[in-house]
Length: 52
Image (cartoon, rainbow, N blue to C red; front, top):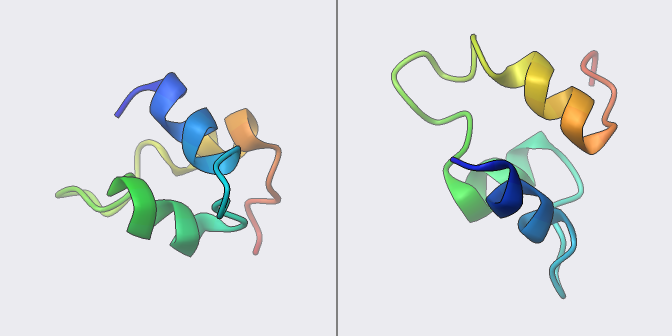
């Protein structure tokens, strides 16, 4: 998963507005670790609150 794919999913016509939407559109956070390693980085990239 690249930064460009994540930002494109957030800026699409039907944008990913939360972590679950991003997971459905890009399969980010859906790997073997279920986002354990990349969750904080994706939240920082998108500006989302990690406590949601």
